[in-house]
Structure formats: structure tokens, C-alpha cells
Length: 209
Image 1 (cartoon, rainbow, N blue to C red):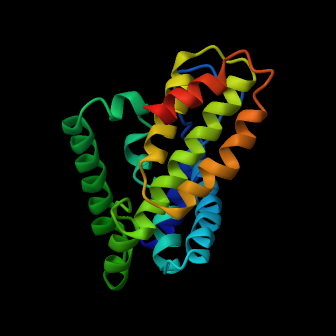
Image 2: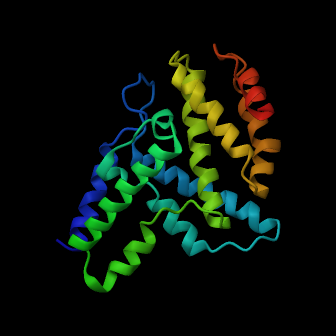
């Protein structure tokens, strides 16, 4: 019981594989994904600050490092499934939040419960930090899908992942999104010249959507 239980539970994130049930050249755990999201978010936040935006770094680190903790309880549900409808997405989020709340109530010492409720909450919202989290999360989806497509993975789900992530990213109102679209994405597309899938075409379709 106590904080030991929380620390021990983090091992489970290393065993939960993203995009389950599909062939992948490179498998990524939820734990690895969370680490990358933190790294993306740091740079994205720096870009925001360079454009005069104030960033709450403590909040940013809390929500980016813990944003997928709830998958310990429900696993990684495929993106097309979890976003099939707003109703389904809402139900899944309700279940996840309920199980996190139960875990905190049962295992975390009273004096730390309010801290854990803040840190393990759903961090994606309309705040600067919440939008950076959304951007970083989708950016990792872009790179995971791109890596599979470039290596010749013919699973259509990775085309969908790549396309849907770009569509989501382009609609996020942040300076770092403009930077990504102008300076990073072109480099990514340039690397796809020998890819069996037409990344350039898919990218253009997503940005024109």
C-alpha cells in the first residue's frame, strides 16, 4: 500500500504496447511514449516562450509525464476505436478517471491525495499547457506511424494514424504548430522519398482537409 504501490505500478506501463493487434517493425510501450511526449513538450514549450507565451512548466511536466497513467487499468485502446464517437470516448474517459480515482483513494496517503488527483487528471484542455500536451501526443503518433510506413509496413491503420494526427495538429492554435508545419514536417516528408507509401500525397491531403 501507499506510494510503493504507485511506484511499482509504473512497471505496468512498460508492458502495455501501443497500437495492439497490428504488425509493427518497432513496438512502443506506453512508458516509452510518455517519455517522448515529455521531450517533445519541452521543445514545443520553448518555442511558445520564444513567441512571448507564458508557460507553467510545473503543470506541463505533470500532465505530460502522467497523461497516459490510466492505461494501466484499461490498456491502450486503438485510436480509431476510442474516437469512433464522442459518446464512446466520453465513456472510456469516465471509466479511466473512475479507476484512477479509486486507485488514489485506496493507495495514496491522505496528505498526498490532492496532489495525485491534480497530477493524474486529464491534462488536455484549452490552456497553453493542455494544448502543448495535445500537440506532443499527436506528434508522437505522427512519428510512430511514419516510422512504420517508411519501413514498408502495409497496415492501413498506420496511414490513418499518420493522417488523423496531422489533421488534429494543424487545428491546434499554437506557435509551435506553425513551426512544426513550416520547419519540421518538410524534413520528415523529405525523408520519405523511398517509402513504398506516398507520404507526400498523404501529408498534402491531411493539410488540405
